[in-house]
Length: 169
Length: 169
Image (cartoon, rainbow over the protein chains, first blue to last red):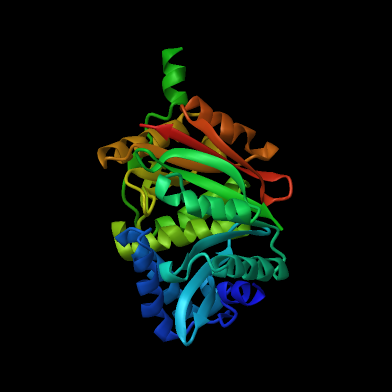
């Protein structure tokens, strides 16, 4: 049983806090294959990667990449929210569909929270959608201790609310 | 009485939807003199002006400037929120302290709402602070028909909440 549990938790997944130029295409493919993001969202996610590759941490964005056997299987993008003392935004988190349910999202988010706390951050905010397709996403944040702070009906489109989650570190 | 009311409502204030390079310094001075914005906020406000001067409407930002006797006395900055169908953000609105209480803020905001509606926008969002210094700001939005959609405690700093207002057009 122990072996099975260990296998499920992907012991050979490594997290790294840097991006290389080859990650750009890998992250774009990863996001496309989740089938959760619109073409515009995919463009924006790729833009944030590009900003970091050009400007480093001066871009305002930071990344954690999950890699297994040399392949990018998940990533998270976060950053300090301008004009706030210690609030951070989790801009993006995604795990390849074939690698979900193995605890990689949890490890990515814990890594992000640790890095934010080390930076002196006290609050992590996440925006997500109120649509049914995002039930697993919202359940994930709730399991991770995030509190639903606000719901903005019809924010993304009619019937598609923005749900804002927050966690105090 | 009628004359007095006309004088108070600044009949010679003109609104224009364009920015010129000389507006950059004028807007920065205007924002500084309101005493409501931090140095970082002033930098960001100036950055948005710079983005528009470089990239026009491709910047994602649009402006309305209030001018009286060739002097910039107020302005608003707004734009479509990426990844939404018809939601807009009012990023900035400011009127010079010596020209407040004359209806210029109201005219600016009505102008912005009309331009958003002409663009097909259905929702206008405004973020503001929950601090006491912003009591008049929040009262202004409420008079203009904005509804308090969310309060995020300690968002900007301990004791400084973010208050999100929304108006459906």
